[in-house]
Length: 50
Image 1: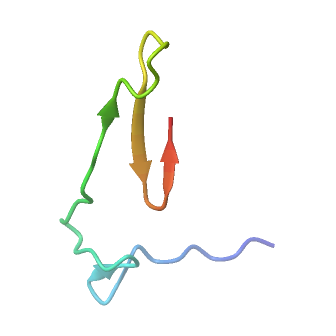
Image 2 (image 1 turned 180 degrees about the horizontal axis):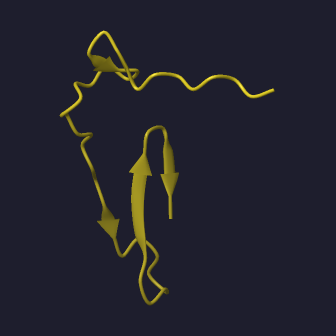
Image 3 (image 1 turned 30 degrees about the vertical axis):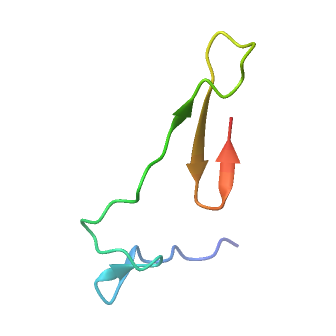
């Protein structure tokens, strides 16, 4: 049996404390792998992706 979905907003704020119209900061680094034709690193929460 699946768990019921968690509401997006509780008390007018998201689970991470942001307002409904507030965006997260985004940082994108390009050229992180020198021998690749194209590479980028985009941190997402506590995880980083190449």
